[in-house]
Amino acid sequence: MIFRRKLYDRMLEWKAQWGGKCALLIKGARRVGKSTIVETFAKNEYKSYILIDFSQASKQVEEAFDDMMDLNFFFLRLQAIFNVTLYPRESVIVFDEVQFNPRARQAIKHLVADGRYDYIETGSLISIRKNVEHILIPSEEMSLTLFPMDWEEFYWAIGDDTTPVLLRQAFDRHKPMGDAVHRRWMRDLRLYMLVGGMPQAIDAYLSSNNLQEVDRVKRQIIELYYADFNKVDPSGRASKLFRDIPSQLTGNASRYMTEKALNEKRTENIEIIVSEMQESMVINLAHQADDPHVGLGLNKSLYAYKMFLSDTGLFVTLAFWDKDYTENVIYQKLLSDKLEANLGYIYENLVAQMLRAAGNELYYYTFPTDNGNKNYEVDFLLSRGSKIMPIEVKSSGYRTHRSLDVFCERFSSRIGERILLYTKDYQRDSVITCLPVYFTPFL
Image (cartoon, rainbow, N blue to C red; front, top):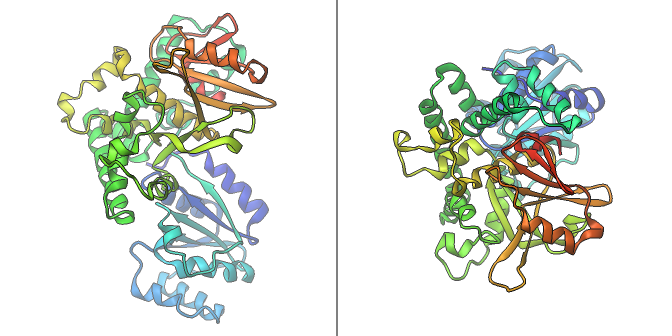
């Protein structure tokens, strides 16, 4: 199925303002829907298009990029190979999986300067960077990121255009919606947590109405990520770090413990591997803010961070990777709202995904208690105007928030609105705004 995606509108803006002036690079994780949205855009918005998938391009296509001196001949060859007529300023050429042909990416500079056609590139697992060490990266390139389908896009996919509008209106009112509405929205959210935002998983859900089939599709995607990580990092360390994400979040450590995940006392060059994992868009990193104020990025720790999966549906499957679907009680517990507190890290991963999809960088803050026996932790920090918005995530209805209270006392002059995200309806608890977790995208 072809799903409605928010990025499409931003692609239209690029075409209207920058078409013919720069190429468009769509970045994102594998299987997130880049090729689909780009081809749909090319079909709908241009008189004709040529799509070159470099992951399976023929030798004839590859050889066309050997000589770019004569662009007239280059375009003639492409039209003959694909049997497509190109029309000046009415056609687009798509370089799909461009990381497999660095010369094609380098040619963008000259193709854009020629001005006859528009150009869109897609790339995954930014082995783009690894494959362009000896070529000139085009400056005539605008990049956009495609994330897994977010909460609103999920509603669109299941045929509900009304609820996303109502959610926004309810958030703006800041009043309880009542038990019946709240229970329905939480039920929808739990379904989203299980299925996730990968288009293939949503398609499997819609076509089969069977969560076992959805789980099978998600396992295939995770296996693909393992294979990709092993290509980028043959040592296997990237795969180990990825596999240990659920365990690390369960452990309540103040940072991701790479030495524990790798079973190594010394983890040289691990920052490079983690950076490549982050660029792959398969994970989201939340960095510790060493000095929490509105310039969060200026004081982030490069060595203390938490790691999340970019898609919570994949996270649920990875968390129970060693169990067959029939033994995987998490599906039944989530759907029936009987998720134990010790499985609340699923909500934390969900909030990370929602905040990231809304355009936020992720930061958190941890500091020792007075007796030093354990740490306080504020799960997420957002910069809003001249203040910071601290966020604590709870998987249950309990409104205890000692970490949030102490943090706000310590940095009172820097604090704006204080947010507790949990599974109950909206309410105020003194100076803290308690919001149901489905309002996260609007923060």
